[in-house]
Structure formats: C-alpha cells, structure tokens
Length: 270
Image (cartoon, rainbow, N blue to C red; front, side):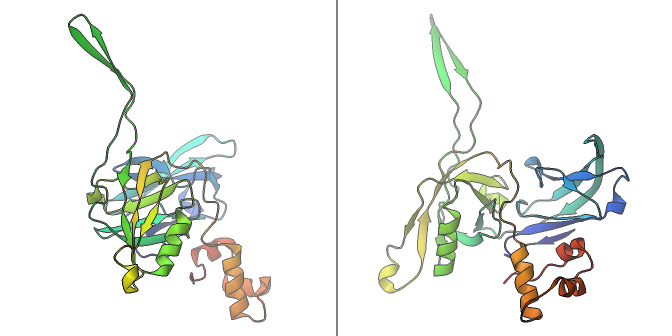
C-alpha cells in the first residue's frame, strides 16, 4: 500500500492486494475504507482477485489515520470474512481544499479556501410542536446532512478556473480538506448555484476569482468510477510515443508482463 498527498490527480491511496494473502477460496473482494467517519467500500461492487488486485482510493479523508480491510467472497458470493488490515494517511494542508468529480477522479483541483469556508455548518430536521393543555411536546424526524455550507474558495489561474467549472457541472462533487475545517473527511455535496466573482481583480488584469459556493451534503454515490484515471487511451498514448509510429501489443508485453503489472506501474499522468 502506498499513500500520496500530491495532486496526481489528487491525494490518494494505492491498495495492492496479492492473492497469496487471501483465502484460497476467495474469488472476489470488497475493500473497506475505515476512518473516524465510519466505514465505506472503496469499490461498491466486489472485484475479481485472480492474479491480485490494485485499487486507487481517491476518496480517502485527509489528516486522519485510515485503515483498509478486505472483505472476501467465494464463487457463490458467500462471505468468507475479513483479510488484511492496512494503515494509511494522506495530508491536505490547512486552508486548502480539494474539489473533485467523484465519478471522474481525474478531474480534481486543489484551491485556497476563503476565510468563511465551512464557517457555519447547519443541519435541520422536520419538527412539529403540539400543545396539550398547558404542556407542549415536540415530534421530530431524523437530523439532515449538513445544509447550505459556505464552500467559498479561490482560483488564481485560468486552468484552475476551467477545471473547477468543469467539476461543478456535475450534480454531486466531492470536497476534501483538513479535518480542522469541521467538514466530514469526504464531503459529498450538491452545489446548485456556483458564482465566480472577479470583482476587484479583473480590472487589474488578474485571473483570480472567488467562487461563492454554497453546498449541501448528499449521500455518497452508489456507483463506481465511470471515467477512470488510468484509461486505455493513456496506455496507448504512452506506447505510441515510446514506440513510434504506434505501439503494439508486443510493445506492451515488453513494458508489462501482466495486466496487474501494468496497473501497478502505469504510465505517468501528463
């Protein structure tokens, strides 16, 4: 297991599972991420472990210890129990925030947070007060997720502004920041009305924008990544550049002996 705090494309943990460390009857596994905020699956659907498995967790909360455990299943889908217990940690500096598309984790950006960032973190619940004689009673439902949280941040370059605008086109974004912000480590939010404001900057030729973002917490998506970071196109581009005019499967075999080897040693992101 290897933890990365850089933006390649965002803070992440690479979980590398050798099938020799699993129950011989295990055919599929689900990797569980465990932190102070609870337990969530890294992969929502069980993954095949023939020859091993490599997963990248782009949702790992920053600034806290995280444990990964592997839930095993046999060919019939029966639960074989938990294997392995792997520790990891990544860091996002205080005052910085990573905003990303949870279904296309290659779309991510780290920005400076405004001083108002997560200053108020309100929640609500449906409540009805009933009066019986001189006595009053409250009937209420469950507490909501965080509502109308200020997620104001700055972009200082055109590239960062373009990336943030692309991410905010999605109905749900993932916000990660230092735990001192008071937000959950992986805060999934919907931001209906993003407003970039260059007042006080554009007139001086600066590219800085403050983004007035108000987000409300929503449930983590129940589907896995749709647009992978390490795509077929990335491997093809790498091979085409190294073996012009175009790479072949024989060239790929020179670089990687197996599919798992290729996932463990992917081309650099460019």
